[in-house]
Length: 105
Image (cartoon, rainbow, N blue to C red; front, side, top):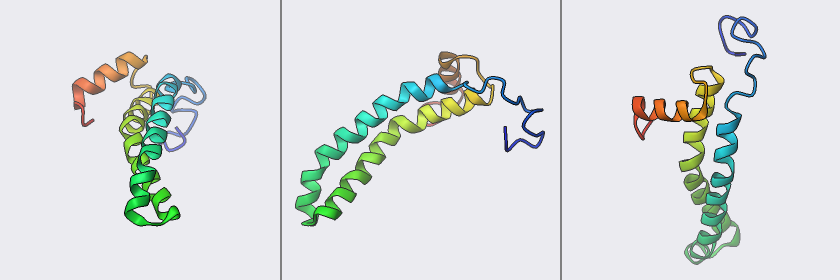
């Protein structure tokens, strides 16, 4: 809304300010769980590969972030569409986006 050419208040102001919160909350725990489980799993193989504590943690964290984005990005797309007022509910947003754009969307 701050980026809208209409201005903040004409674009909706504070109306529906918490739209998309359900999508963000729903994706938060699985994204974090996927990150930490991948990070912990990859620390030992990364250490064997790099022979460096610092590099192995960086590598494991990078791989963990990539895996977590498999959950984080789709929930972010749904959240942003709900915040824009395109959909009224989480299920409506998820179903409509899946039909319109498929898994890649």
